[in-house]
Image (cartoon, rainbow, N blue to C red; front, side, top):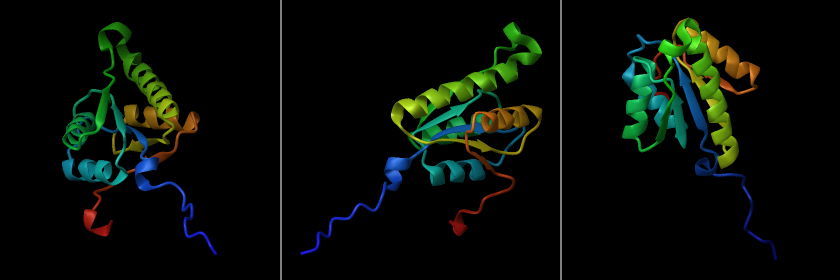
Length: 142
């Protein structure tokens, strides 16, 4: 008699990622960030504590009951290098969180400027998968 209990791989809840977000301070598409977070359903969100994308991700994450980690740049201490230093530290902290919880790690990159490019380049250098969100995401297509 054949055993009907098959291992079909991990369920969606088992593969929920740890997510890092990066994007511009002027990013204002609240619906897109909310829909991306809801769709990816991360266990944790790491964001840089700035206005714009970071603030929207923080609000959406908390509204969805997701652990949010805020890593603000220390501009007074590090000056112009503060954003780059924060990006590196945030990615390293997220990497450690993902390893400790045995979850995949993902950077989601929204439209932004030089800081967004820096964070995205650093993630790629660390072999962290990057999802680039370049426009509005319509939830009706999911």
